[in-house]
Length: 521
Image 1: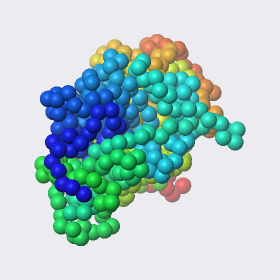
Image 2: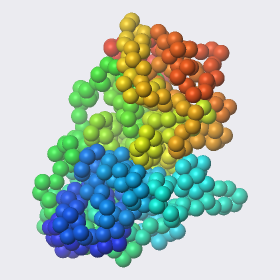
Image 3: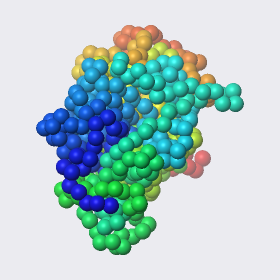
């Protein structure tokens, strides 16, 4: 192992190679100092060129950090990522067809690191069947110049499977907290575990180089062996950045790394409004002992609602970054968690998800068609990417999709437990045809999986291949405020119910009492 600076690390990356970058979302375990120097070198020298850049999760601050450092014509040729939402400049290159762009399921990419490490033939899985990553649709391609097929359909013992082909990786840019003189890496202050070990092993198998950015150095033999995440035998170079932040938004919070547990009072309640009403209604699907995933968007608020209602310790919340138990975070540090019971490497978390370990999954939606198909990956002139959505939604026993009924300027009011639409959103979400299928409603139903759609004014479920309206908010006109705003009218349940009036009042709902009754029954 050799210690070098970030500029020297950038100089080790040749043109035409495949670079895999660690991290998640807003700077969680992202080797930012090295990425900055790669961009500087290209702008100054025009090198390196034509990179293939792989990152399992979207990484960036939704401005110029993270994967956005690669967003220059000539610097990047191909992007393979779970999501692009965190790096708008990279998204723009894909939309303009300036790069080969692929977005693949986050779980598949995480598991790919482990499969390549073991010299296996890629990831063979049912995840992605009948969605936009299925080669019978578009195989995860997001730009016209993305010609190569990275996914193929297979039949094994009479059943359909997808094979995501192995990726040859030349350089790994990873991150930890401490490196010793032999290159052993620990991650004691990191906010996510990621897939650091598997990625280092994968790149080593490919004959590439592994570069790890850390905050500090330690003497040989002083790191607790059980804390070493990447052994020095896999590390070629270490870059020390004493200014390394835990995330872009937080310099360091010991609760994020599991070093302390915060009291419930430290978890601030959500402000009263339609997002809280949606999160509350979704939280009503919880039951004692439920093992759940919380996705992005409105769904991240469910952990905050559960804490406010005193039921957080009675359910097991998880997220795809690898946390089990506690409360996944909202806001710019989402992806991290606090008060968790375990922190798993990301590939193993997705093994659990793919194996049907989730009772409930709470996810967002951007577009829904009349059959209950859902799009979150490409809409409104944006390439967001699926993230972990496909793995999670396709394998959970029940999915609760949460979001506003319309988008763009919607305003609502509340009075005595009723809801009023003061201004309708400009963009409908329940449309005739969605741009990409990320969740196939009829396919899920055929496998016995259930789906519920929660909005601020109405609740739907998928029944016999079509949407069915099952609840309406007090104060809402079914015809004017719901049915006329949908591209095709859903089935309306004969026993159409009212959403609970407590959703639309500022005080807590007292869900703990209901949990106590449920536990006794």
